[in-house]
Image 1 (tube, rainbow, N blue to C red):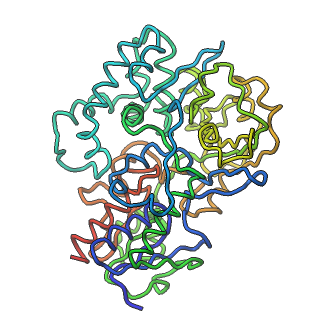
Image 2: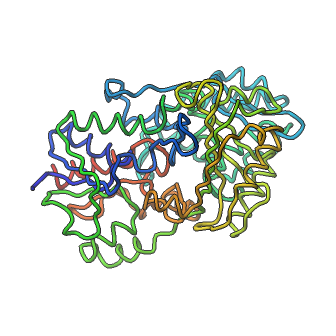
Image 3: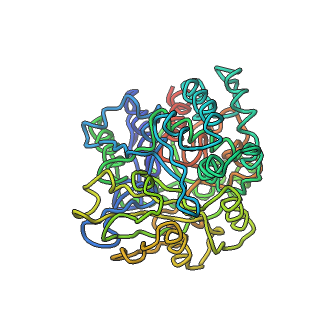
Length: 471
């Protein structure tokens, strides 16, 4: 068998890479070791029959906004995006909560003394998002198309979230941004953590924090369906352990971590690159729990019942404390917990009157500590009676996440640590980070623009191949 390109991995990035090549008339085969497509973007009934939980990714603000998928006819292959009444929220003790809506004014009106400060920031991000998007969703080591706008974004984004939020007049606005910044999986005192907050606020007031109807698997299922309609082939149950496991090809794209690529490619890589890839540094892991509930989460702050995503961690100081402890190799008693409650807007996710909830907290990489009670307690703190509504729960520690998908090393769902140069040197400091050699390319969460469900890593890898080996 000879093809123009072989793609290793049938997650969102791998499928997107293949589609990008197929749309340019190249022949492609995708190799996937699992028996289903999706990687860390799948769905399953992990608790009880009829309760559909997401395996890996759940809410996808970057998915509905992805330039790689914007003009693809995925709706013809079953994809429907669901928009919850509120995008996300963050509860505080005492029954208060900060809630982000698609509407900037409505969001700002709920932030008390910081409402005007938030409005000014959000209006700028929303107005200039189309200029910012082109830079933040691609290789970072390049001249931006809109240098003044990116300089403005960069001067704010390079700051630690804790510094960016100084001078706030209330706890609400800092808490709202802290939950977004915590997606960096770094102590919030670290540089660049503010950029994560700004990114997610920009998405909030543009395309919103949407998710696929029926679960994350509906997205990758649609990508796979479209890929096959273009003449591409997906081989399931095909593990790639050595170079000989690949068919004859002109270009190979790995939708994997750098260490997996180094193992397979071996001495086909330059020595220094092979050494760097083999020692790729991963970040903290995730400990996830799926809950089947007998009713909605009984949030003390009723406004959270309309939010598709809830960042559970309290104030900025409390979130920062939890993330700092994880970075220090500890397991916080009050972890920062990300909760998705998709069934509030998608009735297909649970039986009538019931709800499917997806939640995770950060833990040290490869942790074997059971965080189920601590995670549950943290939700109960802001939703008394939550425990009474649990019909079933299924805990997934970091090692099980890695067993499910070898890309999630030690439970790291972000493809590598963001500390130091980890955000920009992915997998190396280069204006062409997706090109490894003349015939070898990498497009995964370990490449720009990083983690999340958006397919852009695969898209850029395919573009690099089209400019090189497949020109």
